[in-house]
Amino acid sequence: MNLANVRFYQGELDDARALYSDARQEFNSIGNRLYEALCDANIGVVDSESGRYGQALAHHERARVTLAALQTKYHVALSHYNLGKTWRELGDLPTASKQLDTAYHLFEEIGSRFAAARALVHLALIDARQGRGAEALARVSQARKTCEDSGAEGYVAVCDQVAGEIHAHSG
Image (cartoon, rainbow, N blue to C red; front, side, top):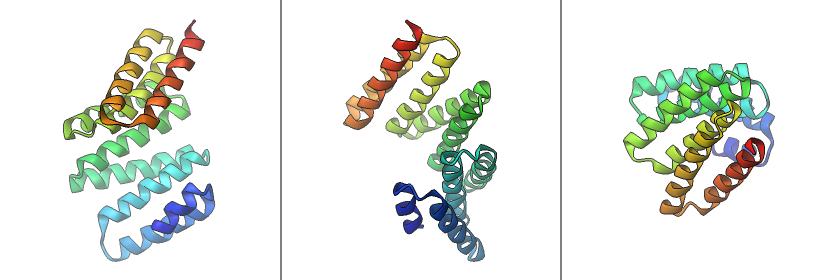
């Protein structure tokens, strides 16, 4: 799975997908449901990055179901996050919002504040697309504060960029 991660970050999406698929089969053959589900989640991310949103949804949902059965809250939250981002790309904003809101609350519940902030930014993007600029900016501001407090300076810059885009489109 590590080589698949390297290929993904190198932008070699087809190679990454093939390696994740091979790893998924291996984990399935030895009964390791956690890593099999994580491979499904990674395949879903690759499919989203490649514009194969229908396939991405299937992999994210399969991962979510397995991870929920295994009661791994962080990974369940991450599955909702990935589903929300994918639904947003497909234009189903109500479903995307529901998934991202679930992710946000689960991340908050387990104390994963940075991940919660990332979910807030994606919720803000949905608010902005629906013409709710003030709500979008409030979410981004909250996410930015969380990132500042946790030392996630790189994501503070992302929050600033998103806020600028929202201002530009709502003003």
